[in-house]
Image (cartoon, rainbow, N blue to C red; front, side, top):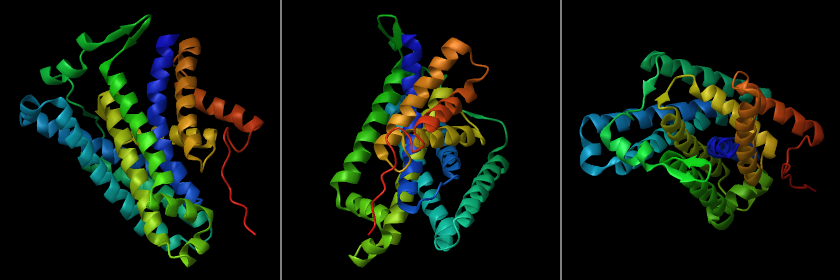
Length: 308
């Protein structure tokens, strides 16, 4: 049971990172960016291909696994950030004042486009993370596992948990402590008033998309590490679960996205433990349904400013 809780915590931390991208965009634009999962997939591909290139070039043997993972992560963040910026400029900004269904349809269209674009460019077969090398095994191999009572903690579990917690804490501090973060919060409350007091609303929205995409790239690399592969359709289910996590915690609320992601991961892991893995993809949505029946706005609720 405790081992299942650890697995759920690891998976839930990844869901939380993805859910933050959904909730940030929704908090400012009241828009569900359904292409967010595909940005995650693009980031996963970028990280796997860069790390594989470094491995085959012998760089992991000379510099070490962690520096090469850092390079792969930075590359994935850069690529995903460019995709997020481009999505906002091409698919969403021209429709900002259109009826609400128009940007939603555009988001679904971009999701389908990106998924098929990567499938045609990379093929339908998975691209595997080069986790079979001796250098990788020296860092993340079974010999480095830590036994804590009945729980077996792997180095990869610790890596994912620490990185996700640092990102969540860093994002929360950025939004609440920096000048740009305050501009983002002001824009989410009232875009018109924010513009009147000198805030560049377009710039804030672009930065929001870039930050959400960068977080998606991190989650994509972590999923590629966790599952040892990247695939063109990996973003769909990960994105749907992260969206569920955002709604579960209270979409538009950063703390709600974090809480929802972790609870979702735990619920999924416990469901597999007691009911089996056959309906693994169902447990998350059953939990969401139960929560929404009791509390339609999610556990922490959406922060809505009263306008007078």
